[in-house]
Length: 311
Image 1 (cartoon, rainbow, N blue to C red):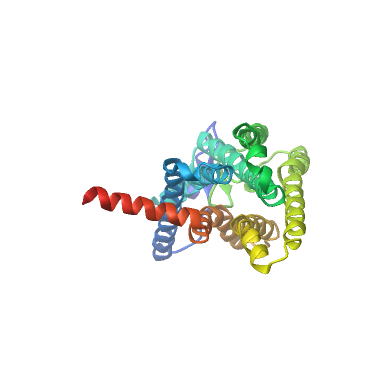
Image 2 (image 1 turned 90 degrees about the vertical axis):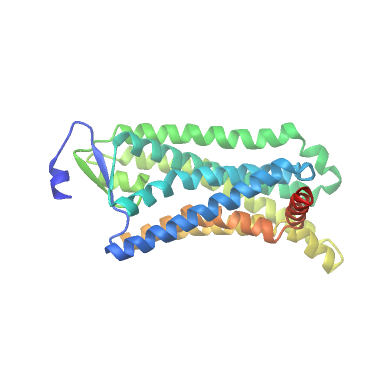
């Protein structure tokens, strides 16, 4: 590592810290991360395939879920393959171009997750508060209108921050105190003044985090208010349970994000970063499959059709 650091080239390279471990521990981490990655891929690919093939699931709720599962596949694929490669080969060095691409995609998909979860909250709000007009309000154009800005605004925001990072000064082999090229780690490793970048982060956090959280919170206040008006306890539970999967994902996503923000040590931050990246993608198929009658029925129909074809 010391020899690599002394080999300063015109274009900086980045030394991904990953985890400070022994050889045996590195193999264990490789195995765990690989299993997590494969579970996330298979689970979310199953959701996307099922929602695409089943006409009965071509509804606004599942349209948003399909977008979320697609996003989760791309989100983890931005980070985990490199971590698996580092654990497998022991090669911690990442090129400048790869680092810039990774930070762009990480910010892009992370922000899109915030916006998509907000769109899904709005969908649940309309479904619970205006059930008779749900199909009319949540038409295909409206669903697209809720999803397209999520992808577009996130890509714009990611481009802004990638340009900022591109203009930071790095020399030689740069230590990145994380298992991927993360914005905070690159700011700490830079020799430039990052005050403008920090101010931009605070400003953009208003529309990428604060406003989405407020909209989700406001949606569920209205949902709870509507649910409490239902006279039967069975009716209240049935109505609110239609939102339970989304609530679980929102709590895990923002809860892990806040915990990461409050982390104190480097090792703690790395572990929490890994949890933040993987928890929602791995939970998404689980909560929507195990707690959703429509998806469970769709899976049974697909299995029965395959068995019938073989017979």
